[in-house]
Image (cartoon, rainbow, N blue to C red; front, top):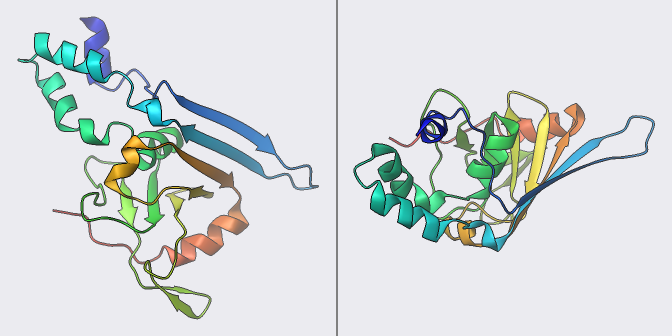
Length: 184
């Protein structure tokens, strides 16, 4: 039981078992570090094990909470990027009506950037822009994600490329100045 208590209290770091992490550096005079995070479609790992555990621990609040949040179990934005960066991220991406910004807790939120936005004196909006990116808050990290912020991307393979560079970060952070309000 001590293992479950540590897991419930967040003392055990968890990453999906089918998630990979790689780091490369450019060979420039000022090298840029690039982190690549990916998750496979199979990252919905443990579904049968989870139901089995919940059957026996159905009275446990911890397992009930897991079942309530299971639909977002391996969502790349929250369960991979936020968890690895250990920071709040501001996200520019097309979105569905199911996934909202996440401001629960005291830190490590997902904040959605308002649309329309201004990019160097040019107005753009989410309907006209197909890119999916995020910046850390605080920090100097810019991430490009290959999946939009949709609920169905939890069951698809996904990848994020994160660059720790102040110049790149500054350009995108300026776009991310206006954020949607946190959902109530």
